[in-house]
Length: 212
Image (cartoon, rainbow, N blue to C red; front, side, top):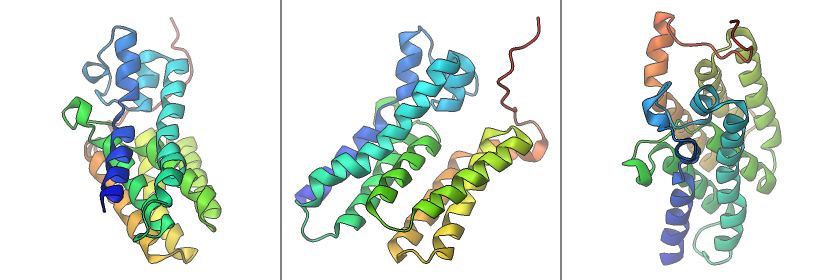
């Protein structure tokens, strides 16, 4: 039991590392006070620049991947009462929770999309059958973004497609439950975005340089 607790705490703390906030502080910017105020990759892209935003995105993905693969490998053979795949799934959820509600910033974190993607990538490396699910998520996100140019709407659509895809490909019950939890996480973290989308006020992301 102590090993399980240690695994979950380690995963949460890894997810809690506020990547965008740290990069902002390095540049003399409190990212919580500018742009959308979110400490995720999208706000980092808008506020800190393209290269920093992409770096933050990759590191946030890496957090989820490392929790499932590296920490998962370390703790898997130490926890005999819990199957390795179940442990990895729960550790992934803890990592995402850490990103969304980081202990280092008074439990105010990001929205968990990149870290969730990293967790799913890690699970796909360890569990059969998840590759197609990830393909559908990416396709959903890219399609919605190509049409709308709205990151939040794309993320919400991908999140909703997750449990649908998991059910379609007949994955284990624990993955179905985890996918529903992830979907709820995304919807909760995007409440304000959903309201702005409904009002037609949600900003669109453009990679074009503004004209002088």
